[in-house]
Length: 155
Image 1: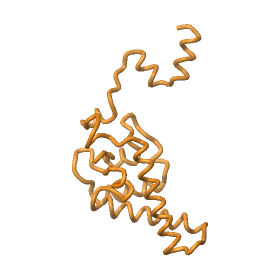
Image 2: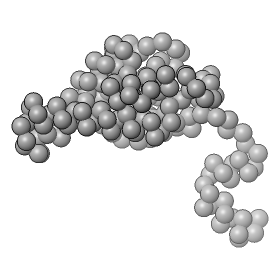
Image 3: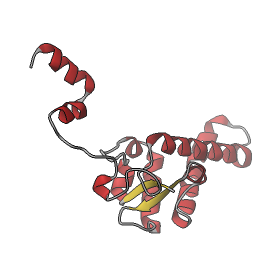
Image 4: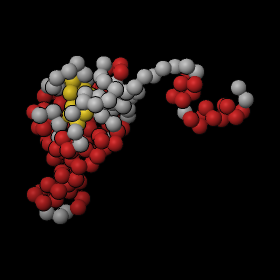
């Protein structure tokens, strides 16, 4: 391998280098037995981020209007508490938050079906901590989903 190939593999990342070596990663969700596209397929990052943005904006609006009445420092803290409650209640009952529903997503168990309330509560708490939600695996699932046996799929 000459210097140009070595530099190119470094710039394109380990996944591209492995694919050049003949490793087949398949599509996101293949290891979980999910379809490649359409209903039941893994939710793409853009949709998930959009759904979280809608949920956060809703929680900020609720915190601003009903709880803090404009105190900016406390608004964000209350919005986080409201997001936790909103997530536990909505994902635990209907499988999606208002933002997820708007973007056509739902949270399901890896084995199929709905998550139990304890797993929903743990998952929601991990989302509020943010770091577990920012660490993704090869299938595009966040650490919060892996730890609770959940997956976000398209409706």
